[in-house]
Each structure stands twice: as structure tokens, then as C-alpha cells.
Image 1 (cartoon, rainbow, N blue to C red):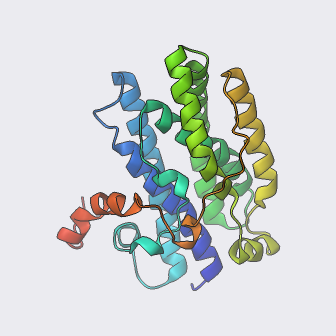
Image 2: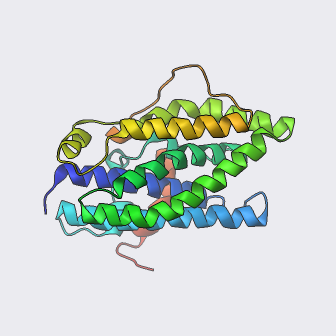
Amino acid sequence: MQQPALFEYVLRIADDSLILGQRLGEWCGHGPILEEDIAMTNIALDLIGQSISLYDFAAELEGTGKNHDQLAYLRYENEYKNILLVEQPNGDFAMTILRQFFFDAFRLPFYEALMQSPVAQLAAVAAKSVKETRYHLKHTSEWVIRMGDGTDESHQRAQSAIDHLWRYTNELFYENEVDQTLQAEGKVPALSAIRTQWLSTVTNVLSEATLQIPTNDWKFDGGREGRHSEHMGYILSDLQYMQRAYPNMEW
């Protein structure tokens, strides 16, 4: 089933989930409180679970006999199409939460729109994932408000995280000929309407948190085209180690 445009599209979504799940997994055993340690680990597992379903579909579309493990673990850095936002370091707790909040505020309306896709596998993944993502957004929104409208230090750390991460958010809405082809066929949603919903959510939550959206227009991108930050290689060295050291192993 050779469908290059749809394969590329599904791979992007899967890579976003996998790499962010890997990043969040780094908090396991290191969360600021036990409850939050468990919450972040569960969100990481949700994202990795989404990536497995998407990689399975991508493998079917590619038609070369690969499975989800091979797509997740056996590609080179420039073959991953995740956005730069999800590969940024965890930093402090505020940086992790704001990174997740920006992503969740996009993913919820994105999955809600994708549920309407005539591509049955995409619609099914979206329908299952939207329930998880709704919780993810509620969780991170509450933390953003709590930190922004909290102590002087928590406010400063949250604002610093926003100021640093904002430059990566534009890539959430990256589109090229892949998107244009699939949109013309009615298979996937346009991201312009989703951008409006995302900005509304972000603006409302940050306003309640007494935090400010940066006024600069810096935009960092390249991840969708396989050009990554210096952090990506380190992520993959951890992520891929077991599969490369013990080929074809399964849990």
C-alpha cells in the first residue's frame, strides 16, 4: 500500500508523540512530588502508546514489511520528522510543563478535527487519543496557572520557559505539499483553524496565569524536514540503544 504523502503525514504525528514521550519519561523517579512523578510518567506512556498505533499504520502504508519497532528505533536522525519543540530538554519543572502545555493545546483540537477523517485508521487513533489528550491539556493548564499566579519564583520560571519555548511553537502549524495533497483529497484538516483554537487556549490560560506571550517573532523550525537541534542525537542514543545492541529484541 504505497501512499507516500499519507505515510509522511502519519510519521510526523508518530514521531512527535514518541520523542515527547521519551523526554517526559526522563522525569520518571525524579518528579517534584510523587503524584506528579506518576502523572508525567502516565502522560509519557499515553504518548508512546499513540506512537505505536501510528507507526503500525505508517508501516502498512510504507509497504516494506517493517513494524513499529523498526520505525521507532532504526532510523537515522534526519529521517525523524518531529517538530523541534518536543525534543527540547526538560530543564526545570516549569520548562517541562510549558513545553507540554503548548503541545497539548495544539494536539487536542488537532485530534478533534482528525476524528472526522475518512481515513479509518487515522480517525480511530484520533478518537482514542483525544480522551487522553483532553486530560493532558487540563493537567498542564492547571499547572501553568498555578505557577504563573503563584510565588514570585514560580512566576519567573514559568515566564522564562514561555520566553524560551515560544520560538518553537510556529512549527506546530507547518504545512507543505504533503499537507496540501491530503487536504485537497479531504483526508486531513487544515491547520489554520486549529491555529486559531490553539492561540485562543494559550491566550486564555496565560492571561489567567498572569503570564505574557512574547512580542518577538522568532521562529525556529526544520524538524519536519529532518533538520534537528543538537539535542536530538542524545535522545536517539538513549532511545535506540537496546534495539541496536540486541537487534529484533521484543519485550
